[in-house]
Image 1: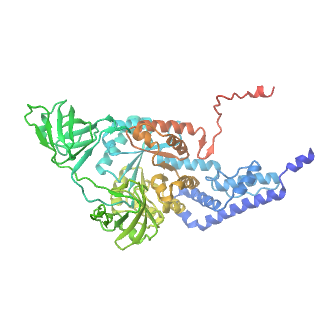
Image 2: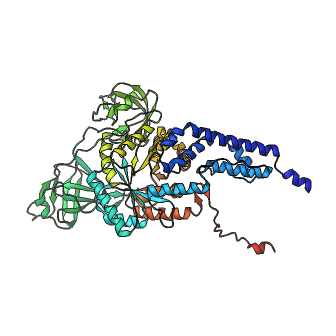
Image 3: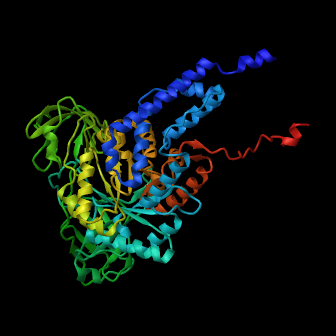
Length: 627
């Protein structure tokens, strides 16, 4: 038995080898810290320790330590798998235990961030950016506001009571008047509910998008809701009112009509017309309002300016009228695999391909883009993607004022490309203007009304420096900065971006999974978002998990199974973002419930070993097991 016990003792040479590896990792971490001493001095005092720890973590992850981890695990020691927030403290703890096994004198190393300090630093930075921790939940919930919330105060109140902790206002949409109404309503809802709600406003940044298309005919298409069998589920609600008269309730479409003609309409009246395809159609008036009427439409209709409407009541004083001016319709480009597309530098309105009588292409489809800088930064052979990756292509030629693109992926029936759709160049190293003139204009409003500003499409530290300079000029140095990581270049430069944004007192990171998936490839998204979570935790910087969380529930009222799993995994972030939809309240309530449940099982990527709820297998009590 004595020999057997001796054989089980760890090998002294093996233990000393492990200590040497730990010491090497520690020394290299210090060396990297020294190399970036000047960068550490520039960060805000609240992030000074965090910056050092980030560099230690980057040094650690420059090595493949899987064999070391396995050897430590076999000894029952920490495998360093949870070292992100306290790297040198973890190395020191493992070294102390190895020395205990060897019965040697432990060497005390400097540990800038202890285990307890790591949690406290992250908690402090979370509260600074995202507000106080909500009751019974560690992870905050953020909701993106849509235009209608500017006039729906009651819904904002209900959203806050359901669990919304932060509101996101996107400066790419609406204007200062609408944003101001949203901010005012949020502040009022805070007073009414006694609940805090931080306000984050997005700067659009150097987003690359498609330019305008050549206007089509002035018409509107109105479609009732149908099921997969083409059967009517719900008629379209249409607002019939004088020009430029807003409706008090949500509707599917609006038509401008003569005020005097409208004044004679009563509930139940049928308004007959012939649409642009020659189809006989009719509206049914269902409700009179002070400035117009709401009507139901039961069949899809295409209505142009000048379309004649006739009341079915024979004794009506004015039986007919005409639809007033309508905005020009947008005719999208329809692109198929192997089609050619010209991307223009000049803002020439886009047009579909032109064909001759025999069906040959005389002129390929063309469209412009919003940022002319790219034409000097891309190369032939590089991929290009449109509309969140729905259309893929490859650049064949780079000219001074245009790119010739061959479409490599699209729907068999053709994919539609419209104006203002995203363009991604994942293999191109783009150095785009950091803050556009529009961003600077918006920032003046943001600095006065928001708690934090989000910088979209941030690729290089210079972009963060420009934003810091603008905030200083606006005397808004206390404002939080959120970096939206949504490009391959931004992900590649993440360590430098983190060190730069840590110069600000309040900072965070958003994993913008939409564009990020397009840029890095769908197959790499899970891996990429994990790395962002790790690096951000090493820097003690809060992370927002964004894009399409419970999207089907918010928009359609029922979540998919995959979305439930995604929402559960999002608990490893510090905040989860929902997009506004018809069923946003249900989405907030469900996410609140999921996050509360998941935090009992997991904190970040550490499993929390709470008691299992085992139903079928009845385990014996401890006293029964010993009998």
